[in-house]
Image 1 (cartoon, rainbow, N blue to C red):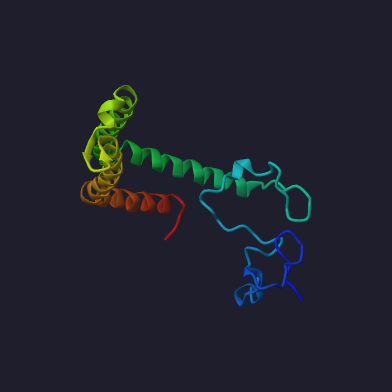
Image 2: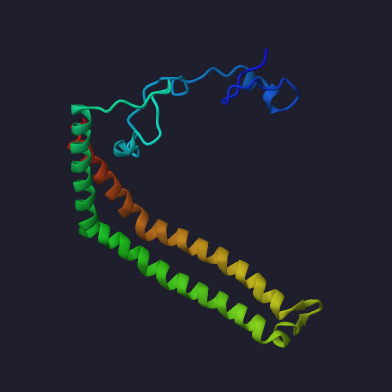
Length: 186
């Protein structure tokens, strides 16, 4: 007997991935059960519910009364916390450290890339000049593009680790503590 796929059609019992033991022994989790309650997801937009959603049996989702208003009040209070954090000196410092690295780095990288493209299209004789055997200037410049891409990624990760991660982690912790206090958590 084959398992039912998510679209209701029976799965094949062949030698493929559908026939493996891990798929045969699969039991639906509580979140997969039809009509199960949705857990408290902070990214779920309660105001957008009802836009084509159903309660699992084809009917529209019933509107919540006072519970929805209470969650809207909590969301507004949490939004105030995030605005307060965004206006804080610590957040501004993390953001300015980020921008002081990224803006000049991206500008330099784009200038190098555009220089490579302009040189390749306007001075093809220079780019075709052999350097060593079959290797020419264009090949070296193209490999240089790859090298600078990895160099920029390494420099960004190093800068983030040394200059921003600790301060950003402290901000994240403080924000979670503030939102937990607003929501009446422990």
